[in-house]
Amino acid sequence: MNEPDNPNEPKDGKPSPHPDDRLEPDSFFEESEIESDAFLYHTDALNESDLEIFEETLIAGLEELGLLFGPEQIDRMSSHYRALVHTNKTMNLTRITDPTKAAVKHYVDSLAPLVWAEEEADLPFDVRVLDVGTGGGFPAVPLAATELEWTFTAIDSTAKKIAFLREFINRMEIANLEAIPARSEHWNAPRPFELVIMRAVGRLAKCITQAARHVAKGGYLIAYKTAAIAQDEIDEVGSILKAHKLKAMTTFDYSLSLPTDFSPAEYSLKPCPVTTEFGEVLHHRLCIFQRK
Figure 1 (cartoon, helix red, strand yellow):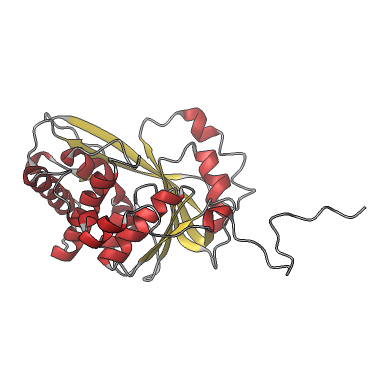
Figure 2: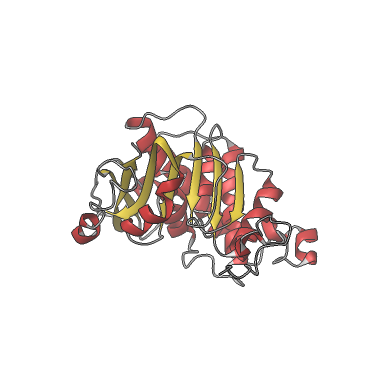
């Protein structure tokens, strides 16, 4: 018996695009908003004090990492924060919009793989990075803004979030970052990536089953987690590593200090846990799997 025709397959035999790929990049944004540049330079969502706090927190965090960037890199992250807060009023991009918390929990935290790469990894000069489940652009935007020699691809299954990122990328002319509407398990990348990163996308086993196939031989899959990750979540990946050609998990621990009352001197990020009398200390971990 002949199989029924696939309604999604054109008669010419060429596969139809995945539903996630049917996207007009600017379809979410009002024409008047784009023409007025309100998307990047609005004044309704943030006051000058908030923006100053964000930038001071961000710069202090970068200095603690030992990273020095010029005004262009800082401006890209600051512009993304402005666009994020503005768009978040009508689209659920993030629950964290406070300037201090956003700078630490989103932007500086996103840069932790740079510390790991410098201290522990053996990566080529021109790394290709895939951000799976990027949401509002984390960690892809902070990484692309600061690591200019690497090229980044950010994917997400929510078309409106990708529309937001594409508009931002186009406005800021970020040449080393592209955004694609896709689900990792359905998407066929043109070639594998040296680094595949996943932040806030579920349990480790889910990360591996969805994204391991995109990792190049010798490359790495990195999942952002808290240091308090449950042992059962770690244990359940042991049975699937071989099937996905991954080595045993290694970890990279670091801590973020989030002051109650903002002061850049009270902020720190280091490869090992730190303690502070100021505010909250966030103990985080990169869970790292290398492809055999």
